[in-house]
Structure formats: C-alpha cells, structure tokens
Length: 358
Image 1: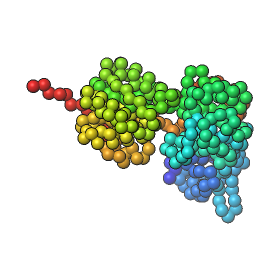
Image 2 (image 1 turned 30 degrees about the vertical axis):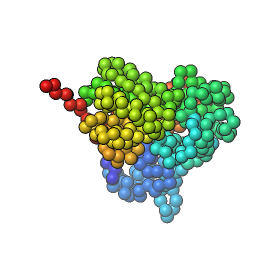
Image 3 (image 1 turned 180 degrees about the vertical axis):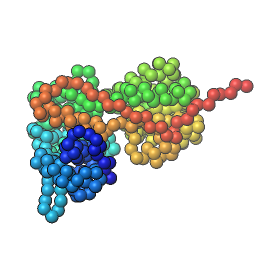
Image 4 (image 1 turned 45 degrees about the vertical axis):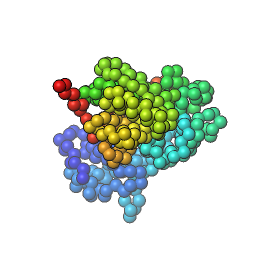
C-alpha cells in the first residue's frame, strides 16, 4: 500500500508520481520482471487521477524503466548491463570449494549479483588467485586474497582492467578494496567484555597470515591495552577447529583466570563452546564467549552466540558499484573502503559478578 502524494506541492502531479514510482523501482520494491500494480490501483493509493498515473508510467516506459504489454500490463524492465561490463570474473583468493553454500561468500555474491544485474555474465574461479587462473573478462572482483598474491595483483593493476578487492586489504595494495572494519570489530568486542567486568580475556584465532585475522588481532590488542585488560592469545592450526593440545592450552588460560573468550572466527567459536562444555564450564555463567560472523545457526546454538555481523551484502554491493564506476572510465583511486560491523548481543555473554572476599 503506497502513501498518498502531498498534493500541496507545486511540482506537477504526474512528475511526482513519476519520481515516486522510479524511486520504488530503484529501491527494489518491484523486482526486475515483476508486474507493477494497475494504473487504477496506483491512482487510488496515491490519491490522483488515473490519467496522471498513465502519464508517469508512459514516461517510465519511454526511458526503459518499464515495459508495457497489451492485455498483460506493465512490468519492471530487466536491468541493463552496466556500461562496459558484460562479463565479470569472481576470483577467490583462497580455495573455496563451497562458495555459494558459505554464509560469507553467499552474502557477498548476493550483493554483487543484485548490483550488477542478471545481464552480466559471472564466471566463478574458486581456486587461489594467480594470473593464469583468470579467464578474460571486462572486470574482476578478487575475493579475500592473501597478501602472498600482492605481486599478481600489482601486475593485474598495470593492465588497467577494472578490478576491486573484496574482503581483504593491506598497505600498498595496488587495487581499490572494500572490506569490513575488522579492527573496529575486535575493539567493540573487547570494549563490550570489559564493560561487563571481564579483566582477563582469551583470544582464539586462525590463519594469522590473512588480512582479516591480522586486523582482528590488532584491534583486540589495542582495545585491551586501553582498558588495562590482561590477555592471552591462542592460534589454531586449522581455521575451523582446535586440536586437543590447543584446547588444553585455552583451558589452562581459563584455569588461570580468563573469564571471557573472543573467538575471531565462527567455526572456531563453535569449537570453543564445545571445549568449554566438555570441560564442564558453563557459558555464560562461568565463561563469556563472543564469536565472529552471524549465520542463522549463531542464534540456534546453545547458548545463542554473541557475535560480530559483517555487512556482507553491502560489501558485495559496494564492490560491484566501484567496479561499474571503473568500467565507466572513472580512474581507480586505489582507495580502501571499510564498512562498519554490528555487535549482535545474545546469551553467550554475561556481566561478571564481583568475587566476594571473606
């Protein structure tokens, strides 16, 4: 149901209707190929004459925003491909066998496809990024590359092909990049835990060679120093689980007084919960736990996980928008765009009770 127009405005009513309908199309209120409500229905909702709506819809059709078919109605036109972008490669910086089944990659992919539109051919390259692995295309989105690919990315930048890095960055990166604020995310976690009274916090992370983990460690250390929080750090050899020895090292930190754990990865957070449960610690009564990333399962585990939510959809959108800008012959500026994260509060963290001294 659309709200009525403000009929006191001096702008012609058909122009107001045109702008309202165009705004709804651009915002995705009606998707590509979706039928627009009949003109008589729109007129009743907007509080104007049917002829006024007809003039606005005619203008939208002339400009290619909608198509009209006699006997069928008015439909949102398919999104035209961005100028200069008919084929785009999505190159994944780390081996990604389950790209679309991953919450991380899937969120990015959805934002990318919605922005580029269905007319752009997407080619997925799930292998580690190298020059040889990339087919010819009008543009490239390099997703989560390792810093070890810097030389290849430098070479790619010299080709002047439109290219944007998504989900990674480092000093001297030769290409434009869009990433979430991993440093700020870790700082928010530590500030939250310190605010709950936790003065000894354990950090568990994996893949320290990646840009994301590097930034999370840096943010953790900086905010812990600011709050005078005692810390311990534990590196896992595998990105999704702790070995028996690594679990024991973490539990030793807990025995020595750590009252909270920041697991800087989602699967690591689940394994931390398992390790604490197996050792008969209660979460959050004995130990608070914060994770990273927020798939649906984060609210279904027990206890529901306090975690960082990355703006994956928005990251995909912004990367695609910047690629479109480059294809339109806007020179890349090599800049980094960091998008803010959310701290999602659930039941795995709890205010620390002050110990009673007899």
